[in-house]
Image 1: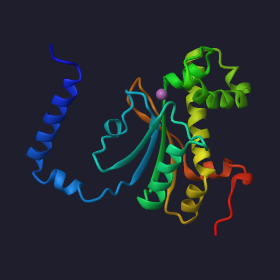
Image 2 (image 1 turned 30 degrees about the vertical axis):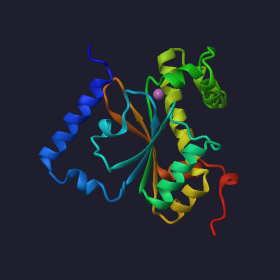
Image 3 (image 1 turned 135 degrees about the vertical axis):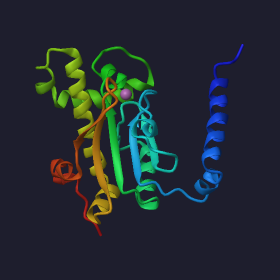
Length: 211
Ligand code: CO
C-alpha cells in the first residue's frame, strides 16, 4: 500500500523535475537570496495557500499563517516575522488575508472548548463583543460569520498599524498595508481596507513618536 504521505514526496519530485525542464537554472537563480515584495499574513486553513490562490511563485511572498490570521501583540513568532520582513527584507506590501467560512472565526462564536486554541480564539470573542451591536442584528448565522470575518481582517490590519515597525515604514512611505478577504465559494479575493483608512482608524494613543 502506498503511504499517503508518499503522494507529497512524489509530487515534490515531479514538481522539481518540471521546474528544471522549463528552466535549467531555476533553482540556481532562487538560491542566492530572497527579495520578496510581499508579506502575507493569512489563516492556517489548508484551503487558502497564499501562493496558489494568488498565482505567485517561490521567492514572491514571505508567509506567516496562523489560525484566523490574527495579529496578537504578544505573539513573538508573528512579531519576529513582521520585523524581519519590514526591516531586513524590506517588503513593500503587507497583505492580511482572511477568508469566508473560517473555522477559527466560526468556533469563536460558539461555546465549545478545544484546548490551547480556545485562548487564541478568545481574541476574536473580544472583537465580537466590541461589535455585538451590529453582529447580533444579523439573523442568518452564515451572514453573521461573513461579517465577523471581515471585521476581523480590518481589526488585524489595525493591529499591524499599532506596531512601531509598521508605523516607521509607513512614515517613510516604503510600505503599504492591505486587508483582503478570500471567498472560498468562488476563489476570488476582495479588498477590504487600504493603508490610509486604516491609519485614520487607529486611535492616537497607539501612535509612537518616530525618531
Ligand atoms: Co480560517
